[in-house]
Image 1 (cartoon, one colour):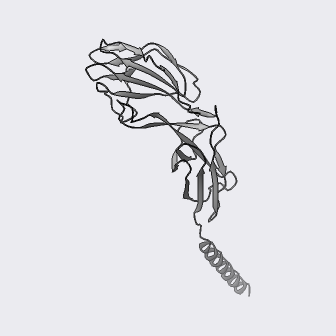
Image 2 (image 1 turned 180 degrees about the vertical axis):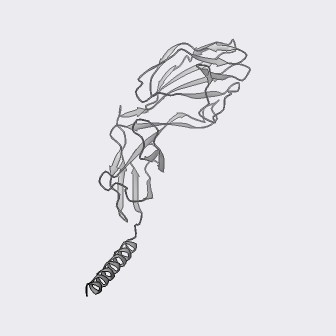
Image 3 (image 1 turned 60 degrees about the vertical axis):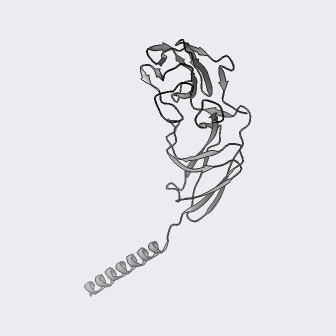
Length: 244
């Protein structure tokens, strides 16, 4: 008699397990749709979930033109309490290809304070999130930049602390005569100013830049003359990149 009840009990457990498994399999998870509406005057990259100790986000999920709406699909948040965070990065023009000596448009990233977007993504739902227009003084840049025009007859490289810098337009080492090159001064997460005392032009020898202190969001503009001197531009030698 006891054995009979044991068999019945085991059969009930098996049936319950099969029922639960079938139910779980029928509950399919579908991606959500997130609409990013760009109310700003800048093209904007949207990144998702990055290490807050670094300025470089990890995953680019959308690029939204000014005034446009971009719809993307996203899987439900792994953490249904904390959710996911999206980071808008406004594209600010550093160089314009319409200017003589510049080969292509160059854009750099900036962020607006308190613009990060955090919410829980649930299966199959639709969301709308707005990208606001920054106000004057709200844009924060991550790095500083150097512009130099090669007015000599030969190719040059830009050297910092013994290491060559790559051009922002094409990642090349060399700057041909007549061309204008743009280079990044990389800041750490906590740095506010960098003393630029080891910056040089390399052609047929090494030639020093004037010493200066670089700040985020500023462009420092120089000419390399035919007499192998590096001098500040006579017009707007230091340019604030904030267009607002």
